[in-house]
Length: 418
Image (tube, rainbow, N blue to C red; front, side, top):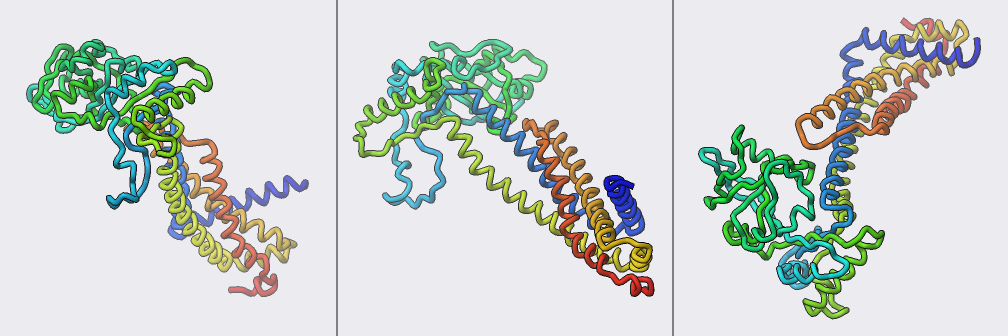
């Protein structure tokens, strides 16, 4: 019999014995399998969710255009502020003004500059009310900047935006909740008691950042004049001119120089505004979400550890119960290596069964996330390999002690064991 054939037989024999052990000791084996399954389930479910969220965040950021960057009053920082002069100097940054937005739009390296405000309001049509719906207010070039998928009606014009007309474009979800089967175009909807005419319906590309909720888009000046939007919260989206590799960097340099010059900042002064690129936003997101991911992986490792302790316990009991069997095998010529191999395969089989169950449960949760949330969760292939590999490694690692004990048994004493 060849070496490979011998090893294959030993593996299959160990697997068969492990399955028989599970059948004979269902509760004991079940607890061991459960610990491994929980650990693997957490790893797979979290990995699938994180992958889906990462793709969704990247898609949300790319929706504004791959080179588009953002100018806003405050940077994204995580700093404790006590109100003193020495902390959070950015709190004293002046707001972005309409005049500055217009000045940036005149730069040769800039193609479009769009103003944006975020707000919320109670929305009502007849007897249907949405207590707090999100409002995104833009300048008249909204359609050129973000490219919304308007499948009914139209976007508001530059003239409507400049004069602050009471017009609004709503997303599909808001249209369904307010109007049901009715045609929303031309209908008057009340935003905090102020009437707006619905001129369009757009398909919202829901993602992790944008979410799947009723939303509407209206002109910035309409929001400020009729709904009390704060112009001090104004932010800008800047689309560079051209597709050259350094187009964004050139535009950022020009925007920075223009804003610093208009605000009278000297070279030694720090900029009192923030410029955010999509790369920086994704980096910030990763720094926040990465901590959460590491914590959940650490918690799942606890599950594997508990399962590993269970492997030690069940295998030690198995060695004790099968002492005479081990003695007989040694008497018939089995080596220490043969005995140790058998018990290691048995331990690995138990943990792989638990890992497979955890993988299956993780797959079910992934399907549920994809079906009921805007997150396109998917299991990375490496997560499958890592989950099964970790469960197998756990079985081998924690099975070493029982296997070594079985291999060291004296055959004569083992045959006398009752």
